[in-house]
Image (cartoon, rainbow, N blue to C red; front, top):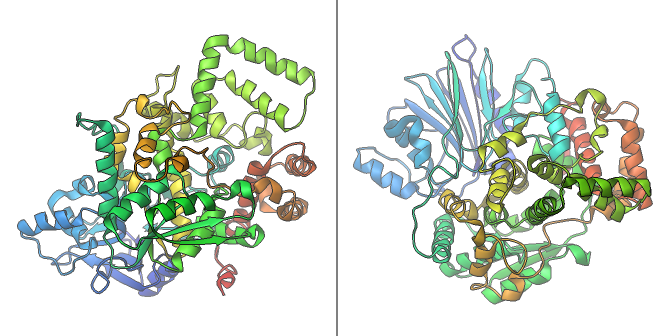
Length: 633
């Protein structure tokens, strides 16, 4: 696992220096603490920081082919690199290492841009063809690894993290209003946008080919492109694919383990790992609040599997952690489960260098509660019609009912009157259904439209949704932009590699070939077929318990430790965030939450993360990490 970066001056007379490349790679040191490398080829410079996982002795980057005409820097793991290498050797290619990185340059020589379709793994790479003078950027199918880039008349630059690119601009890039609006709608800035004009994220399953004449951007995969042929019993086929996905991710020259929450996904992954290993190490954290503590369930699974189980009960210090989270995310991200992920990664890194994670099962197999809620609302609107819900909403407002139960019911009645796309959007959103006024007037109606496009690209017919279609939407939106971003940033903050077996693209293709009867669980919830598999591997009572999620007691914090911090920010006379949000509206939310009449914890967290991000990246844009590095000492 690595951090990559580079800059190409496109033959305009400028030339990168080793000093510039070293400054860029220094911002990525946490991604690769073991080695660094810089290389200048023509007027392009590559930078690399390495976390050694495979081929510890000879896997240094940047790496080139035999005659130095093709160069690459690479972040990730290619799980089928041994088979690819064997085929390339038969075609006459010569290798000087046994790492997966070198496969990329030779694969490019054989297949050009089409090399991406041959890869099985998680990856982000930049490849330079010195003969053609073309730069190829590519990101893995699911968006597990990040890649930012900017392409303008003067230079093209890229990096694993946005912060590396900011100092390259002669003046701070302006913010994109649509990106800020999308953040307050969904809690993240969606690809290809970033908050800054002139810098974009390469979207999952996309590649960009850049030359002096221009650039092209294209998608090379969707989960519906390769629908697997009928292969007998789907439950047996799922077991085979999960086992294979786990097994091929066990290649490593360093110690590794697994995150274990005691839920369906992580338990399945750990059980499959244990089939191929002895002495598996598992890691769980808990909180001293019973409703948020999954340690007993994780412990039960660990005992059943016989793992070397490591746990830690933490009392999170959210106030001290906030600036660290904002620095590592680069963009505002409102997922509060980043806090437990931070502590879990810290615990794991004290024992191992690589872990397996169970992310992806909910999107593939219909596991989120919001999916079930959407199907229930869809059935109710068909039965009663939207007029009934409108009357109920008017009656509740006329009675002036207040408090959390009434507020929740009002939201449900309001959502039930919407069309399916708008209804699901409101269900996953943060500032919706009357809360749009948190933004200043000129930003309230702005949107990039990415969410609507995700619905259009899925199997959604405009009048109804299925567990499968909702999973496809989340696969393009919430999973890469929130979940995988959180996992990547929090693990790499501690120089820890995380592999995600359930997001093997062959497994993803298979999952979306299944009809919904394999998702809907007659006992309640989703993930029927995955639960049935998991129940053959670990105790059934753990698998069929109510879903908890990876949560923290935000509501209590905003009536305690975070309340004063939030109040202080709102009283700050010149805070840059108030160029975008309405101070009075926020102050009212703080007061309403403190009184206990409303639960605004999720919204307040999104505001707090935005304000911390603004302080780091807008108030101090030329050096967004200045002063923060002292936190590590």
